[in-house]
Figure 1 (cartoon, protein in one colour):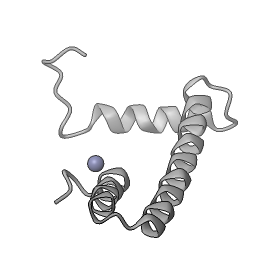
Figure 2 (figure 1 turned 180 degrees about the horizontal axis):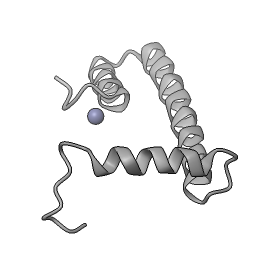
Figure 3 (figure 1 turned 30 degrees about the vertical axis):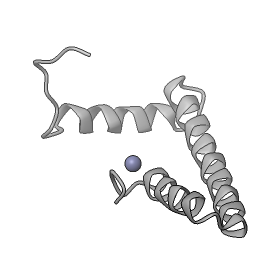
Length: 82
Ligand SMILES: [Zn+2]
């Protein structure tokens, strides 16, 4: 069973099962799926970076909303410094 239900843990478990079964065609398909997930993740990361550095057109509005949400987040623990 996967550690969590994120795309990478679920896919990782499928890959491990497929390696054990030695199904090469299935493994190739899963590697391609993993490659796509990495591309999507990379795109998301690039998008977040340009928001954080302020160069995205709506960066200020998005950061202000995120800051307000963070201030009111019920799970935020202010007693533990990062
Ligand atoms: Zn996970």
